Length: 329
Image (cartoon, rainbow, N blue to C red):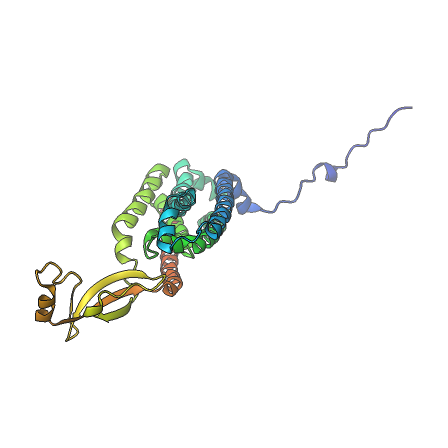
């Protein structure tokens, strides 16, 4: 008896599993899947590590005080591995925007321009606008997924430990790494990296320019303008009572001494005189003034800057689209 072999029909033989992505979206994913998958995998690993470290830290904080005064416990916490792990997490969050801008944004368009891929794509019934929109849209989606997840986890971690750290939350290590700020910074540097890639048309120079802007912004500009749009709260004490203490959770902004006419003098006025009381009386100083930001202001301040940074990202993206549509390939 001979066995019969069933041959698949033509439709069955050519049948392919359905694709989630089609057309230009599928092409962009295939072209950049290594970078996209690396970003997603690294973000997932970082989130899992932060969740683990947060759980360990909270267990330590819950059972480690042993009747110690708050000041002594905070000092003891700084020397633990939990504090080191938290600082490492803060460093990862601070580097997130530059990683997105340098390794995802800068090569995204510059690679096509450098290799001449864009000329080939635009001869296949593909407009420049659709090409740029699809590539940018997928990069934005990956950036959003990674930055939102990382920011949510790290902010949860920060909420549990910031009370035992000595950090000033108005500084970059806290303000820029929690809440909406990592997402807004990441989207801005993604847009900046793409723009540099379009303008210089080379991958390596675009990466270097994005990296240089990151350090210039962080070291020269950002610390000077971070608090400018906001008004600090004020507490005054009679000069006899000394400097007002910063309310719990608050961040010191500035200190002054105040004369009877409301004029402000430097905090150190008369401190180096042989008779400070006589000096203060001579200048008419009657009060000590503390300017500070309350912890309850932090969210509004972060969302305000996030909106500004997102508007800047949209402006850079619009300029990039205008440039691509009008410049020769």
